Amino acid sequence: MPDQRIYVLVHGAWHGGWCWRRVADRLAAAGHRVFTPTQTGLGERRHLMSASVGMDTFIADVANLIDMEDLADVILVGHSFGGRTITGVANCMPQRLRRLVFLDAALPENGKSAFDLMAAEVRDARLKAAQDFDGGLSLPPPKASAFGISDPDDADWIERHLTPHPLATYTQPMMLEHPIGNGVPATYIRCTAPGYANTLASADYAKARPDWQYLEITTGHNAMVSAPAELTAMLLALP
Image (cartoon, rainbow, N blue to C red; front, side):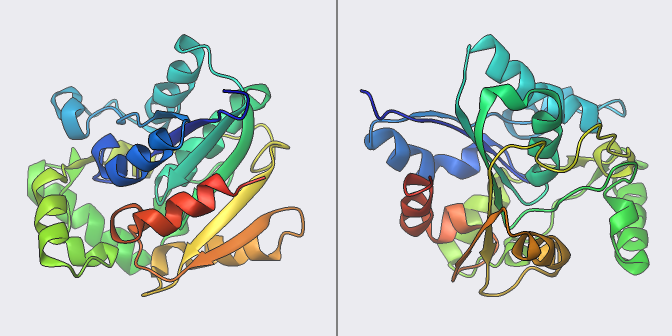
């Protein structure tokens, strides 16, 4: 198929590749190749949780997938915390990427951790939660409502699949040799109903960049669950 595209869909905190099912199925049905890797320590890889799982691990998870599957011209999508991962991948292998898509995603800053970019009260609450949960190894998953999910069936599905998230990915600084995106064309998709406060600054940054495509979708933070058809249409229409 001459117009076949390659999509690599990267989940956010507490999630796994499972969360992309509704979008991945639609993209595959349209004739495209789709990969939904699960980051180390999460989902079906939760048995690999350890204190050593940091941002370097998350970036290697996706970079190694692209390398081992001999992928090129990849549309690399990162949801929420996955925005940090795909930025790291672009930093080290931009030549393999066609476009970056930040889905209501958190953007990193060089030399700073995810916690460095959070309000002090949010950071302190999460650190306490991790300490109380398992001695500081991981962050316990929140309720589905935190991601804008109101449908009871969807909420039940999500909460049954969420797993603790490696704390070190929040405390390890991102070390970037290049500006965000590293020259790869980028699209930012903001979920607006309701707005997710943790990614508001990132959305404002993206909107202000004249070289980035900025889009909005009227759904909650987990668009791949609450608005899969609309999100798929956006991904199919990308340049």
